[in-house]
Image (tube, rainbow, N blue to C red):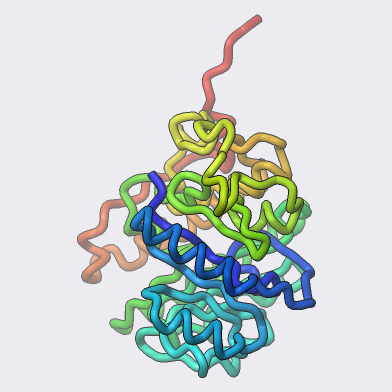
Length: 316
């Protein structure tokens, strides 16, 4: 059931997840469209998250948003304008982004900066209550990239474990989420939330809009029209249904790009999620006698990185 609407107020808004785009020119949502999106959310009792671009919104837009209950995800450059917003950081932003005990960071890590991941995670620790790390270019990861990610996870896990040992408990999605979850907690694009783009159309997530604007799932005027929506659910994802990498986003956009199926992830997505799962397991074991980790359920060891290997096979 839909509970949330993402509003792409500006097409130049930075990616906050795995998808990438190179839109540098502003594609501002018409003010009337923004007002219709807010009204649509109110009629469906959906919560709202606004995605502004890299430039300050015009006064008339700010006036509308000031009267609307919403969350916001913004680039680090707009941190002062949005003191309560989630900040999207590029690797070069991590040193100067303002942080505090209530702030949440999203670190977008392109493949070319993979070797800096552990240091970037360490630089964010203590400056935000939560850090979400999202890898870009996953569909282009090689075996060498996956191996490097494993090394970076081991280094970052050591930094995070030391912070936890000292009594500070910032959440870091690639580690803490799997320790805290007891079931799948995926992105759920298209089932729990939809995106409305500047053109007034709905999309499963912003990534689908950037890939192909004609790939819409309805519009504000005509309503939601999501064909084969059952394929977005966990129940219809056989690989994911037998997996316990509960923190994995099970990114539908990545699935569509790499396997051409909404409900079938690529090997890269599965292997990376299991490297994170195993790193979380090691942190849990290192801190197993330290509260609150002593109260967390153990993460069992597994002998695979891709749950596809665990699907039952049938002889022909």
